[in-house]
Image 1 (cartoon, rainbow, N blue to C red):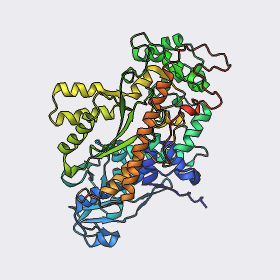
Image 2: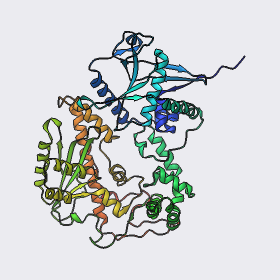
Image 3: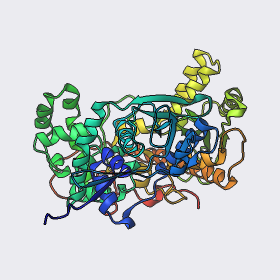
Image 4: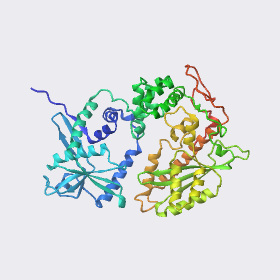
Length: 530
């Protein structure tokens, strides 16, 4: 008597995870749930999907197969199943089915799956998941599914696209499903991905971060992405320690074949790996010009404005402009702690219009003439100057505005190598000892709070006032963290530049940093208010 074929369940959610990261799908099936972190990105996706579908339909959809039999214009709650000869049970739960022309076992109508797209382009994940749903739906309704519906945005901005479910996509799906099943059957997870920059969106990021750090994964070195990691491995550099011990000239020669830009970065990559390996920062020698200062603009300034924007990138909406007003101390020094500094948030409500927002921003800047505008990253500079241009500012006014803006991220990268795997504000300020007052909060959660507070965008203040206060607190903490970086840079300016010595395995402490903690002395580090 032949042995029964063991059935393995492969769901659309596992397929979606696998298309993003093979390891993620394995962890979804076998990982310890206690190690899984809550991520605001999943909630944001569901929120965006809900808004898209409400805007698409204009009425409540039907539910389940009874609604399909009744010919409802839209249906939710369908579970689609197919068993393959190879022993796979495929399960799909499309979030929405939309009635279309055709003839199915339910009558003189048929259905197609619908997908809410985030981002500006269709990805391979979108195409194959729609193909997966189309395949299962065809088997259930007895009618081929030629197209899937893709929607993005809502209201007047909504985009709709009929995606052909071509034989080519079906072949790609047929090739992917057995490989997914094999990965799920493995006793150990697939290796970490080459490029881990997108891991910040994953609920398994904590477990993978710990493994990457413990193994010295090359992606832990700031500046090493997926492609560059492959090049380094080709040259025999498998781990962070290998890169730290490499000869920069030899590495440059090896990378030259792949482009001059790789050759020029060789010495920097080796130095970055050494800094991370030893856990202490390195000041990059600079030519004379501004006395080697990181922030020469602050030498004569009466005060500074620290600036941070909160944005909804999908809506292209900079909804909060936060400022921290920090005057110079009476003795001419700068305060290392900024908790007592005045924080001024400016909400950008769309119903008030950009002209009103620009007037408020310009009035605030005009009240502090000559004060540098400190920010971390290019978002604030781009957002503010484009707003000024849209509101009719002259070229001279825009030049003056740009001259006031000081990008701390850029200055940090020009003058220092830090023992961090990312030069984002969170990583740098955390290394300095700064702590956000709301545990586990990041930009995605702040955006979720904003969307919940805004409701449908037509009735301001419909959401929880508590969420709005959380947003303001998070933005205030971001400005405090930005000042923490600025304060540290100011404190280091009097110190002499230090050349990187050849690694000897002994202790190296060029900037007076406590090697045991790998951080600056606590007295230099501002913190968020409680």
